[in-house]
Image 1 (cartoon, rainbow, N blue to C red):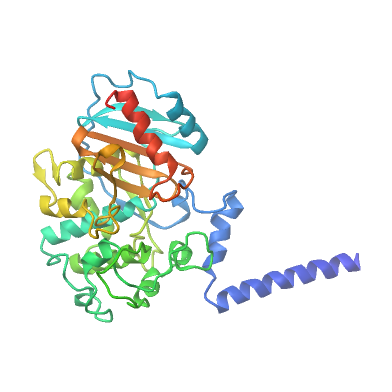
Image 2: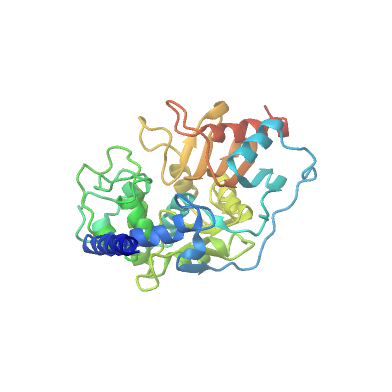
Length: 380
């Protein structure tokens, strides 16, 4: 009994020491990570994690429903698509043709109104907010220096550099390192301090380097320029004008700081996410209302750098099947895939993404979703 007591006391002491060290080295956010992931049976962030964080509501206005295609759900998913969806835990899958829902399916109890985490699809939304802030006159243009809003940054760094992932900031992008900047930004209660401590260490505007910190700083610029929270500005700029079906939620670092995680973490549904695909497919116009300048949309959906043709300003790009494809995407295989030439939009939300492919910028599932959808529509 005495031995057991000594072991328990030693174990308790080790726990206390470990917790103390985490606080000492400003890594106490890891305790939150353990509580909301491992203690709930997950190894990393997951699509239903938003209730574990503070959120700000993105209010919808009067809903404008997606029309259903005359052939709505008349064709079953191909066997390959069904198997991929099952293997990767797809919870929502939409195919939109000619601005009408052609195919729609849900799994695991999810529905058309179920919210799940967007992850990095939010980067595209934040870039759209940049375009709206330029259109509204809050920001001059893509070349405006970030230093106009946060003077501590290198004057060569522009808002366009942040949107196009060409900042030269000393952010370390690593989703699986619990001690890294990305994990800390996901869990910490003061993301502003993390971002404002960053430095420009490479020439801005010269090359692509994907950094979540770019989008977070861009969100802070938009917040400061508009004097509005990102959630409120998103509501008035897009959520209401696009006639979204449901209110959405944007994760905050904390109630005290009140900063949205601009690089991720919008909780919404497949139908509402799809409307961003439609907006960009129509060059910023939604049912006759020009929400974004067409020139901004065109620039956003074209490569900034010839050597990295897979990224524009906030959007991923592909030429799969010899088509110009514009993509919003998240870490667990969240996709809004827009193919304007065929008036097709594909939305996929789910738990996992497919395997990485050598020399490809998209995982295997991305190509499957497009190829099998085209087989269903009989467009290939």
